[in-house]
Each structure stands twice: as C-alpha cells, then as structure tokens.
Amino acid sequence: MLESALYHAAHRVMAEVYTLTDAEVIADLVFAHRRGAVVRVVLDPNQSYNQRAFVLLRTGGVEVRWYPVPKGVLLHAKIGLFDGLLVLGSANWTLSGLGVNHELDVETTDAAAVQTYATRFESDWAKSA
Image 1 (cartoon, one colour):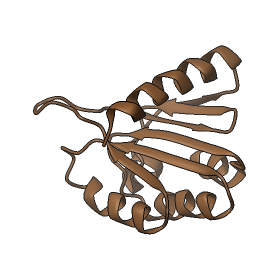
Image 2: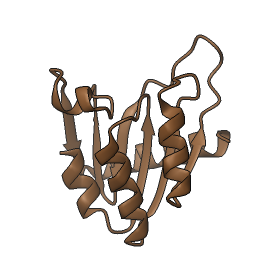
Image 3: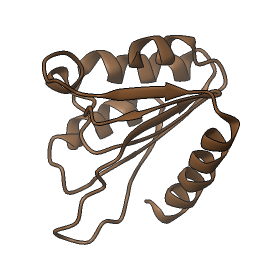
C-alpha cells in the first residue's frame, strides 16, 4: 500500500510519522522528490531512530522537519498524503511495521478526508523546525 502510493505520487507527498527507519521507504521518498514531487516529512524528534532518516532525507533534498512535541509526549501519527490518496493506520514506517507486525492501515481518496489532513499537515508543518 505505502510503496505503491510513494511510487505513484507525482505532485505532493505530505507525511507525519512517529518512526521512520525503513530504508526502502526513505529511498522512495527521496525518489519521489527527484521525480519532481514536493515531498515534506514531519518526524518526532524524541524518537532517536528518526535521526538517521532525517539526515538521509535532508541529504536527498527532501524537506523534513521536527515536530515540537513536549518531553514525554509523542507525535504518534503514521499518515501520508500522496497527491489525492490518503494512507493512515497503525503501521510505523519501519521494516517490522510494514512487513512483520499485524498492523491495520487504510487508504482513501475521500475529498473531505484529504482536505482535512492537508489542512492539519500545513498547521503542523508551520509549527515544526
């Protein structure tokens, strides 16, 4: 589901992710950027595993920011908007989250859901550094 969404994204990718460690997903985000999509990613700074993803994404030209979560609080989202396709659910963007664990994700093209998330993302993006 996520791999296909990343592969087909032509214009925009807006993602907020608690844990991003899957090397293929990171590479696909960079590849989407190189294809010409505007790719923006918000990560949880308190999740140490995200440090590597942050560096790899930024080095690859992807816009990436840390969400300003207070200590003891999580940015626990696992959601991405790929053009008009919204993918969200319980899976962290990790090897185990995407291929080992029993997770539940859903995708939708519902215009109201897409717009609601896009608005929320823009707000979270503006708060992030």
